[in-house]
Image (tube, rainbow, N blue to C red; front, side, top):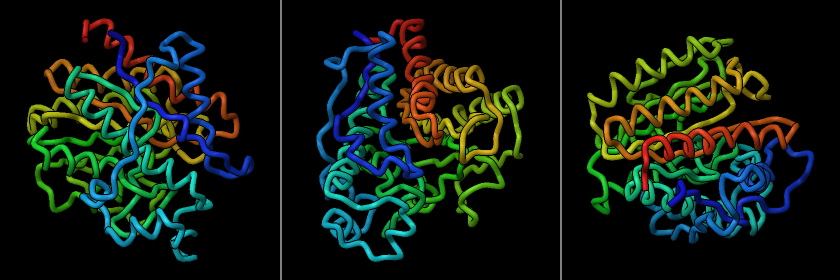
Length: 306
């Protein structure tokens, strides 16, 4: 059996080509992984739409209804930063379903990856920063309430702080929120994660990897979670348009391998979600996101998972 990978063709609906958000990156990531021989399209697991009642584990039912029916107000649209459409609404619910499926695959096999996910800026009753529903918070509540996990740890390595996740889970002690992020970056008003690790602008590979190792060596034995949700944002990359760190391709690959091996070395299942990444060169961006899946496939083979 190969590494479980989750994807759906709904992930890249038709979108304005000039828009700042690279909506086609999900399709290009799938193409890259297939072209590189990591998987075939037929091997990709296709998720269902996440039902409203599951979304409501983390979000206001009225907000869910208004978004899905295209009734967001002007200010909400501005905070979201994406033009609403019915395909976008379907894509959004499908992607949360994909993160749920990937998490359940990780619990079953030890490791799984999504070709989307990591929408950590979405809040209880409003969108923000290109994020509509917070899959990290939805997964956490779903696994905890369904009894599939007693403790969940979110290890968020996106360059931006996971403010929505922190606020949505602040009253849930069984879900531990950890955010490694560039200190001087979006959002301007930070939330309080359980563990915030602000990083200076310009940090490169070696210093960053030391922080990752130190954090996981401390936090995983401390909390002993049943699963880790790993937000593997590539906006930490030196060429990213919205990040201010200086990681190389090799640094991103080393980070991903380190996170996965720290978890699996302690018999903790881990699910990888792609998080943020922004580049006008969409093909380069897809390859950058694919570092997660390539790293995970190597770890999967080295550890003989099935």
